[in-house]
Image (spheres, rainbow, N blue to C red):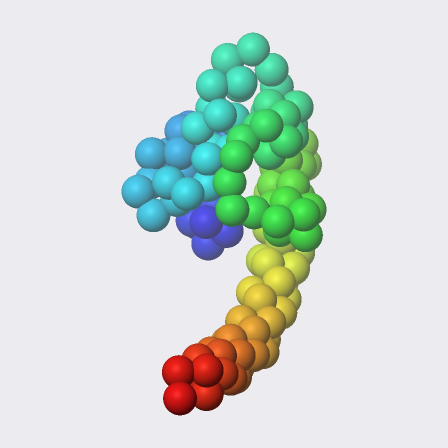
Length: 129
């Protein structure tokens, strides 16, 4: 999502409303339910407020830290292109850090699950014998 936003803003100078519409219609971003909600709210609210409300109200898979990182996107449109690029780069860096942390956590938890599964299997075997 960050790459798409960066390209659209830098090379196409797409207005924020069209950008949100485009993002909300992108199939690979369908799990980000705050995008269509933001698009709806932008009919009545300016983008920063609509985006913040959509993040709060939309159900989804984003955790607290993810939401904090994505909330930076709400600053788009309020600064010049250079400021927006800086915001997007900051957001990209934070999301990359969160992704690395999630992968590490997944690796640790996968090992724990395998160990618990083996112990449970051994316990059932012992009870069956």
